[in-house]
Amino acid sequence: MKAAAGLQSKLHYDETFNCVQCGYCLPVCPTYETMKSEVHSPRGRINLVKMLAEDKIKAEDLREPIEKCLGCRACETACPTSVQYGKILEGAKEVLENAEQKSITQKLSESLIFDQMFPSKRWMNTIGYLSWLYQKSGMQKMAQRTGITQFAPLHLGKFESVLPDLPSPAERKNRARLFKAIGSRKVTVGFITGCVMDAIFYETNRNTIDLLTKAGAAVLIPVNQTCCGALHAHAGKIADAKLLAKRNIEAFEKEKTDYIVNNAGGCGATLLEYGELFKGDIEWERSAQAFSNKVRDISQVLSELDGLSFTKEVNGTITFQPSCHMINVQKVKNEPLSLLKQVKSKGYREMNDKERCCGSAGIYNIVNYEDSMEILDSKMKNVKETNTSIIVTANPGCLLQMKLGIQREGLEKSVRAVHLVDLLVEAGAVSK
Image 1 (cartoon, rainbow, N blue to C red):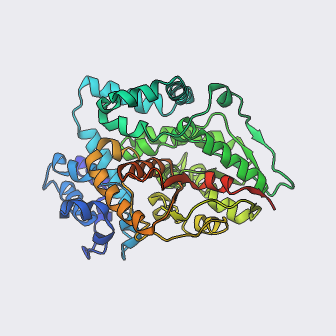
Image 2: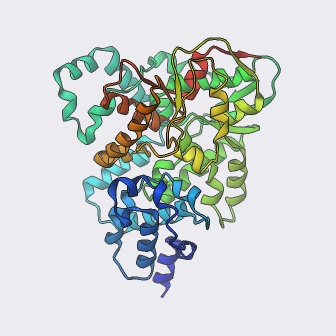
């Protein structure tokens, strides 16, 4: 009886009863659209979770439907009874993770990726250094010319071709920890540099600091911060996600900041839910909630400070592909658009169904490549209908995915994808 109660608790069994099977979630679910199967819809997955909690199916019966879920949480936004699908999904992933019999090789690989690489600044910097060397030494051009990249595992050859230009090791090493506000200081913010963001999108992080200081924010970078834990939580490794969250909470508690700012929609959503992650934990709940209360996307802080003017015209028409976790979890919708519409350009063009997931979803596009590309192709159909020349995103995963979509459609000469922060700098952002 205790084991059954424990399983039901982990699966958030009580929460599944809030689903009234109305089907409002179906039209907004990308995998239901492309896979055309009830078990690949939020409603179907919730039913399967309930059946597992009632011992009517085995854990393995749940694995594929759960692993094929993007976790975009558009269903939560559409749900009239406010079912907490994200909580049910992560509970199911944790149960599946614990139930899986893994080989020694698989355990070692996962330990290397989740325990050593992502939480480690040294590892992330090394990845950044090696990627820079790969680009600057000519190895990238040679690999692409000879076609050897097509033999890379997990379709990684597709993704290496859309990586941005990376900074040299010297540029990385010389970054300061404190940045003064330009003009009078309005707020002090702590900046979450992120693991992938800092390794691959270092220039975007540098531009983030530039915009914040010009807008009137002093910026601190706590040295002991680490990965937000999103990838761990999405893989069912909740205990590991909590360990990372504790390290971040402790790192930022040492700084006096008004906000904790991020520039990656997926990371921001996880940071915002630290309070929920530690709910019921007497030792950590209060500090986790205090941390979450300070979390802001950069677009929110820039909008609130209203300290920037844009002096240059961007050559092209603009459309916006929002991050799922930014709009469905952080509920940040208007601020990025408000900033974009201040930029001088040849016009803004709204994309049909812009809030639908692009198929990136953390590492979904790597581990479920074919399914992800089907969703991306649907997204690119909407992009092409706008006849736009600049796709703006606010999340590193979305940015790489849109770059890949441009490449798949053969639009490299007429369309580019760019992070919101980078476009604002390109538009000549200056202090008001």
